[in-house]
Image 1 (spheres, rainbow, N blue to C red):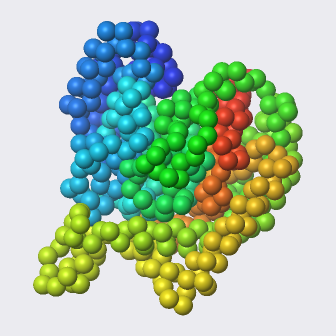
Image 2: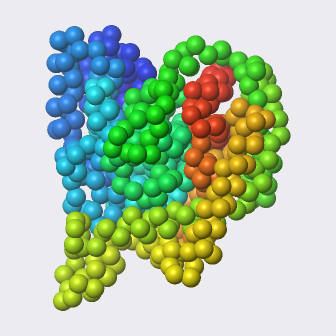
Image 3: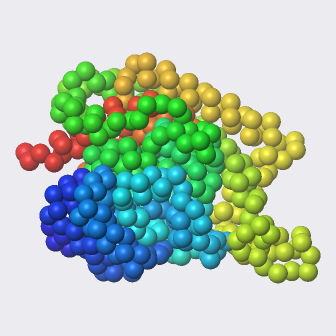
Length: 485
């Protein structure tokens, strides 16, 4: 695709060109639809696209602009992960259980994007019910990495990351329960932002683990992530976990921020640079940290001592909550129903046919953790470890402003490589799940590419409600990489 094609533009550039009337919303949408037609068959980033609805929305956006409407994202097409409700569109969660379900309502984030004039373009592929790290558990087939189609795009928001990286969307929304925005962003060379828990409403997000889930942007640049977060963040009375805090003001913070990092303290946790970290990943991540130092940042050592317990804690808490959340898919209330003579048999057949292997595995694990005699031993203990992890971050942020480290221990792995080894797959989240357990914010920003040309992300972690400062550091590093030597 020509880099001057509208589909290749950033969100900020698209917004500016639409506002200046250099291009019409229809031309932008047509460019993105052409890119989808050309590459989605190979990448499988989208589960469904309603081209007629997108073009109709573009026509409406152009009409509104001709009447003087200046809504901030008027006419910008944005892809949405298929576990986030969009009115009158499928919401399958990449599962046979919801294969024929269409949402009768908008999620809060969808409603807020509509209010900005954005066009919600298509439903993006994911691991089934967002349970996975490779988007290989989707009932609609795996997503392929745009840089190497024989490799995974990451997960669970693999469709969102692949679509943005391959210019099949100007920007996209994903969800992050244990790294599901940051890890695919790292694998595909995008920017992926996991906001503070409570910053963005979860109303209309199909629940996986309610105390961990958070919606966030996957974009081409840090500025784009700031723009999109500003659009979707804020208190929502329909989600009691959203916080009554001022708007993040991330775009304004980037506009006024210095391009250097003088006065910023970046903490490096020793626990994130241990055995199992790929040598090329470590080289690129350490190189990015060195560049931050050259921009004036103070590099300090910090410790997150309970990191080694994060995976075990996460996979008890998340699966326990998944067990409770997915109990509603019983063949009675909605979704798939497999007929049988008795209710118990119908329930068992429905769930056996509707859920894939990984979802069933997590339901069983979570149900066991919550069962009589095991609740204190597993679930309650995991929650205590979660408290210790939260305290680790609080202590670290007394010594630094931002924590830096890898997003994942490896670059994108080959399709099928980890599929039969759940433990190895779960360990790909070792650097991301602590952020969700602590409820803080984090972003993956490109750090470079391996000798094989595979993208690697640098993870920057900020304190709760610290998105504006976090993105300032990410933007400075992004600019430094864009500057010719």
